[in-house]
Image (tube, rainbow, N blue to C red):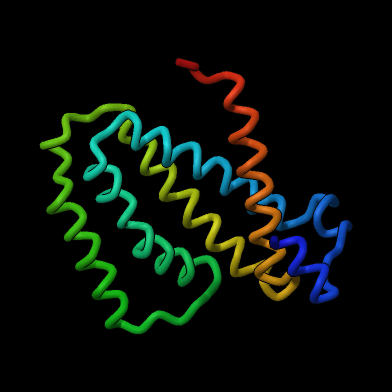
Length: 153
């Protein structure tokens, strides 16, 4: 459907679809993000995974300010600080008993931040629907390839 829409609008470009570019880098990050997220929800309690993932907006705000030189008002910084304290209260590290698997949702969150930073950088050069198409194709292909290595029942 997405390809049909792009063709109908006269914006379909095989060059953008098959030539490695920033959209493909973003797609690779999205594939890794998806793998880390799904692995974490298989191995950890769902509430723990989502508590860690809810720190993503905080990390995106900090990353945008530091890496992209976005302007962040002091009230927003205060909200980030309070949000981070809230994550710590809900997910107190002593209660977890450290397990290496708790790095998976943290990795997924960091990859989500990287994905958003890449999106911010590439959007002036590509249409959003092209980014969606490339990302969808890459995650679908990666998921399809992984089915050959999974347990079949």
